[in-house]
Image (cartoon, rainbow, N blue to C red; front, side):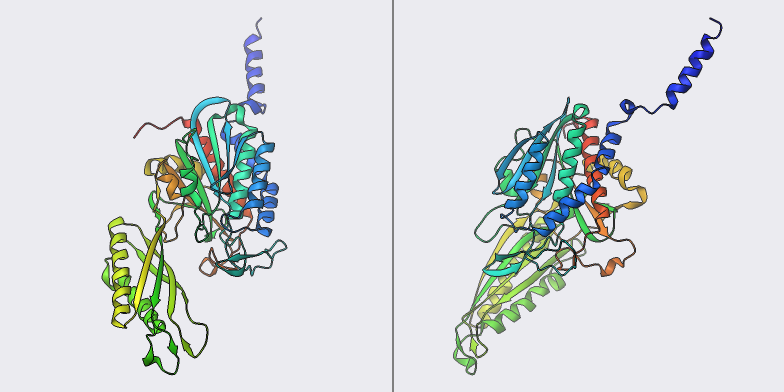
Length: 439
């Protein structure tokens, strides 16, 4: 057969020129599956945006999430930490366990963005009737993770390991007198049976161009402590202030005094910190000096000794100023979140996945940020990485974009599929690389 070598060579050329789905890599197949879901991601996000629900009240949202996960054939648990949903996907091959988390709750904010699907929802919050809006993008997070779950199910036979999907309520904080969020989910065993080898999450963020990704190894977001100060005076007629003790004037002096902590009393060249008084409430009539004024705010830090020092200074300043005015101050400081700490080794391992999705020029190191995330409670038990996805159109002035928590917060929906592709990529790449060595 003198022509056999030529025939084999021709056959080789023919085979190399044929597309072969079986030869396509698992990451490529997953990415294509997620990209194909973009219209569905947008539809889900718009539905959640039009029907926002406050923390621990995410009933409709969790029902829709659970129904979708059940149609995918996943093992679904509902009612975790009140309204949380957890689902488990077992791949067709042995491997490690990875967890993916999305938060579902909205904020007591009245939307001012003119959209066909804008929120007109009202609810009670803190004893007041308020507007409700997804002013922090949790509607996007929920839709993103739903699409990642669907795409991973489509490739489950080739998936080397297990994926745990965590849809979390009350990231913004449980209502007064209630518990919730990541800490309660953790206490109810969300990180058990099986325990993840790693956990990933993302957050859409304003002021960063659409589709760009920001990450940081180590301390990324600050701890958050809720501050409450009740100033007790003695009520009197507004025309006779000397007959009482004015808690309004005292509260004003306390607000000013607290600003000296960060401005003058701690070394912020070592670590940044914030002390903010955000609400002041007292009195019911123009000519009555009230008995009491109540203030609330937040303390943000990255360093535990500095955190304890600031707590002590807040208490001392408030009580001392009140005492000097003949009043008293009751100071309460409650921990909401700890520092969001991205595992350095896992971050380095995750970076190529993010670059593959967004491109090297669109993946950048973020400075530390003073916002907080209760994702930190998962990271305390499992190595984790949390990253940002930009949602502000690139032709806008980033410095003028309405921030997260603003009534004018806007999500460029072109970023949704980038977020989904990135979250899917870090998950499948982690599983494909095998369980990390013990540290």
